[in-house]
Length: 141
Image (cartoon, rainbow, N blue to C red; front, side, top):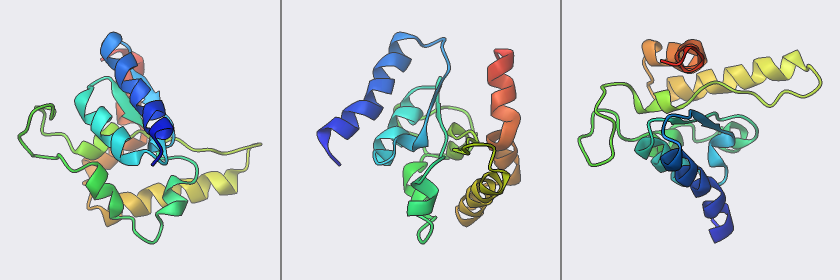
């Protein structure tokens, strides 16, 4: 990963820390800076990501890769959220669908579901990823 790529996704860390009451949703899980994106999402309760675009396509042969990004479920360590929520709940569903291509939207949704299933993400956490977290964000809770 280039220093410039890491800087781009880590810039969200600076913004999230400066504006802790502002919810931020980063695109593409910082692709190709996915590891950085996961860590800064862990550090900042107001920062979430989607995995739209090519990230899930690129990793389709190794979907469990995302367990290394969202590794902190039930792990006690500094900067790890105190809640018992799945680390994967730092994801919200998003899709790069252009020109209303509903078939591509369906493929994107299926890629998300395959990844979450491959990583053993519980149905309750998946429900939050596919809408529950966004409802709370938009309601301001």
